[in-house]
Image 1: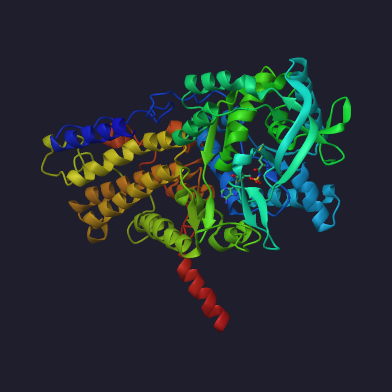
Image 2: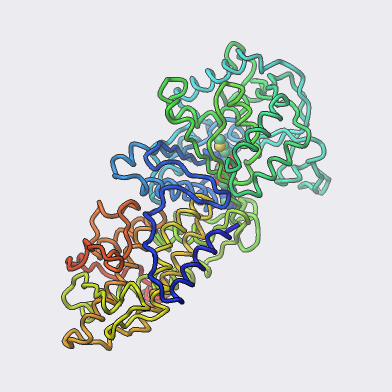
Length: 599
Ligand code: MSP
C-alpha cells in the first residue's frame, strides 16, 4: 500500500548516488496522495472532529483518553495546515462530551445510591477535567442531559417519523444494558454466573444480557442496506483503516433487521421521552449519536455549514453504531452520512482487558502526573496502533520516553544549542560550498557525504510523509517517521563531531556552522511536526530555536532553504532563552525521588 511513497524515496536515493542534485521538497503537503490516490480537503475548508461521548457510569480510564487524544492530534494537525492561526481556529470545530442517559447510567446511579443527575454531574466533571489537563483542545463539550440536546433529539425523531421510517411493533430479544444494545441469539453465549449456574452473556463483550419483550418504536433500518453499501463503495475513505471498512461491508451482507429505537418508560425513565408518547423513552444510542448534530446547532441553519465536514473518531467496539445505524439514521432524516470515520483498537493492561471487576483500570490523571502531559500523550499516540489492540505496562512508558524524548530529541537539542558548542547563541550560517546542492560538482571545500544527503532528503520528505500518515489515521507511523529522522540527525552530528571543530579556525568554522545549521533545521521540522502530539514540548523546542508563533504552521515549513539557494529567515537569528532540559529522563527523576525520600 505504501509502494508509491517507497518508490519516491528510492528515486531520491538513486539521484544522490548518481551525484544529481536533490529535488526541492514540494510545498508542505496540503492534499493527500494516500494509497488510494484520494485527495484530502483543501486546508482552508471547514473541518469538524468529534470524539465519542463517554458514559458516566464510571471514572475515565486511559482508553477513553486515547480516543480523545487521537481526535485531538488529528484536529491539531489540521489546524497547522491552515494558513493562519485565527483562520484555522475559525475553520475547525472539535467536540467531546458525556453520554448521560440510558439503562446503564440509571442502574449505575441506583447502585451508587445517587440520583442519576448527581452521578452525571460528578463523572462528567471528571471527564472535563481530565481532557483539560491532558491538553485536549476541544471547542465544544456536550452533555446529553442539556436542554439544547433534548430539543435536537426530538426534532431528529420527528424528521424520521415524518418520512415514515418509524412504526410501533413488538420487539423481542436479548438486551445488554452494559453495551446498551439488542443481540440476536447467535451473539449470546453462556458463562458461569456468581452462583456457578450458566448465565447468558454477550459473546462479544462478555457482559450479562436479559430477555426483553416490549412494544417499541422501530426504525426501518432494513431499508438502508443498499444506500449504505453505495455510500461505502462511492467513498472508499469513509471508514479508515481499511480492515474496518471491510468489516462493515461484511455486516451489510448479513441480516439487517429493523432496529428498536425506544424503550418503555416504566423500564427506562432516565432518557428523552418520545415526542407525543410519554410512555416511551428514546433509545440511548439514537439519543447519543444525535450529539454530533446538537453541537453544530441542529436543527438551526448553522449546522449545515459544518455537517458535511464531520470526522468521527471511535473505538472498534462502537463501529456498528457509527458505521451502520448512524449513517442510516442520517440518511433517513434527509442528511448525509459522516465524511469520515476513524476507528481505533483498544488498550489492554498486561495482556488483559481493562475492567473495574479485574481491578486493573489505569487512571489517566496519575499517568499525566507521573510521565508529564506531553510524555503520556506521546506514549499513547506513539504506541497505540489503530488496527490492533495494544498492551499497557509502565516499564514500556519509561523506556520509550527516556529513549525517544529525553535522549534522542532532548540530547540533540542540547548538543546543538549548548553554550560550549554554540557560544554566540545564534542560528549559525549555512555554507553552500561545504554542503553543495550538487554533490557531483562539489569543490575542494565540500565536506558533506552521501549519508548527509540522505539525511536532507529524509527530512525534506518528512512533512509530507507525516501528513499522509495522518490522512490514513496512522499517527503512530507519523511519530515513528519523526523518531527515525531524529536518530538520523543524531548520527549526522555524531559523524561530524562538531565538538572537535573550532570556531577560531577559518577552515573549520564554516563547516561547524553548517553542521549546526542543518541540525537546527532538522530540529525545527521535528518541533513543528510534533506540535499535534506534544504541544508544550514542541513549544519549548521551537521557542529555544527562536521560531516565532507565526512560523510554526505547515504552510511556513520550508526545510533548509539555504541548501536550495533560498534565503533562510533563521540564519543569524538569536536563539531563544535556555529553559532547561527538553524532557528530563524518567528513570533518573524516579531515582532522585527515591533518594530524596530516603534522606
Ligand atoms: N457512550 C458510548 C459512545 C457514544 S458516541 C455517540 C460509549 N462510551 S464509552 O465510554 O464506553 O467509550 C467511549 C470510547 O472509549 C469508545 O471509543 C471506546 O472504544 C473507547 N474505549 C473504551 N475502552 C477502551 C480501551 N480499553 N482502549 C481504547 N479505547 C477504549 O461507547
